[in-house]
Image (spheres, rainbow, N blue to C red):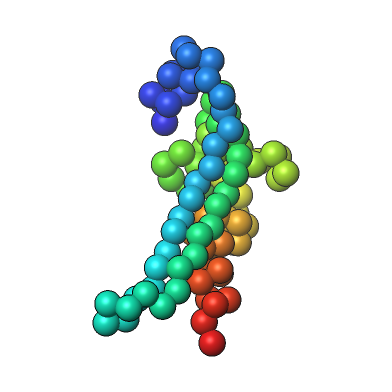
Length: 94
């Protein structure tokens, strides 16, 4: 995380970011369902929050005014790229 922040500060790069999760469910070699979930945000200039892991403290979600690390577990499980991919996969299943 620190290396990412240093690189962005040094290069002045764009801070728009997204987490993406793609899922596929197969049985006996046959693809049954596919889905994708995304969580979009902006990389902060410094970490905020203590929940989560990885880049969560610097991944800011403008619509919530919080980083992923500032969300409760329930909020994150509802909004994360993984949760969205699982939800989309389940919607396809009978």
